[in-house]
Image (cartoon, rainbow, N blue to C red; front, side, top):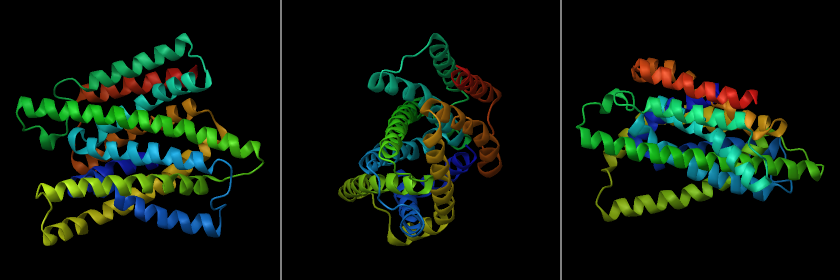
Amino acid sequence: AFFFSCSTVSAGRSSGLLGGASAHFYRLLIAIFVLSLYAMLLGQGVQGGGFALFLLSGAIGIGIGDCATFYALPRLGPRLTALLVQCLCTPFAALVEWIWMGTELSGQQMLGAAVILAGSGLSLLPGAAVPGRVATLDARQMRRLVVVGVALSIMAAFSQAVGAVLTRKAFEVNQAAGIGIDGMTAAFQRICGAVLVMAVIYYLIHSVAKRNAAVLPPEEKRGRLKKAMPWVVVNAFCGMIFGVACFQWALQNSPTAIVLSIVALSPLLVIPLSWLINRDHPPLISIFGGMIAVSGVMILLWS
């Protein structure tokens, strides 16, 4: 949760400078270089019958889910994006496991999901939804920003939930075959799938930008890349390397809903970090809504 909160704040800075696809793609390149060194020298490489599931998990959860998160960040800011994505991940994961694996939801679990949605909705009330840097926009522009940002956050939450369930299944396949895969190796196997998806997305977005004459001049592009690179490096290590490795280790030993419930605490950690780094002062209603949403996550954990 701590690593993911640091990743969210740094992702907000890098995506604001480079755009969502570029910031996400550059951090994946850094992460796959570091993780491949570990996996090939100290880990298990591409071993395990769950390798294909890890690839698919990374393609959906990281390739699509994190890309949607990066595009939501400039529209909603780090604290609200983290709240929506992390808290909605838990009920989505429970829903996916129910449909795919037949895991039934209890009344207490449905109550927890309802509390999460109520807290998230409270944080979306006027005056609480967007970061201060876009608060000067008119009502129509603000509404469009919020609607698109929320839609992207929901897409990100669902994609990450599916990726987490696939990861859990991949560990079960490996364990049934008697093969142990550590968290860093699992993170490497997942990120391979993510890089393949992001390479296609990155190419398509830049092709559209060229046709629309929206490509930045080389000097300005290099300047933005220079400013963004420290945040990209922090994001890569906190999110894709240490954060995902801890996440994989947790999924290896605990059910998906419990892991996502604890990870959903990261929105509360984002608030002071975003306040300190971005000067993004959260209104009281946003903090209150976040507390309600996280309390819904705790209901799910208790159940």
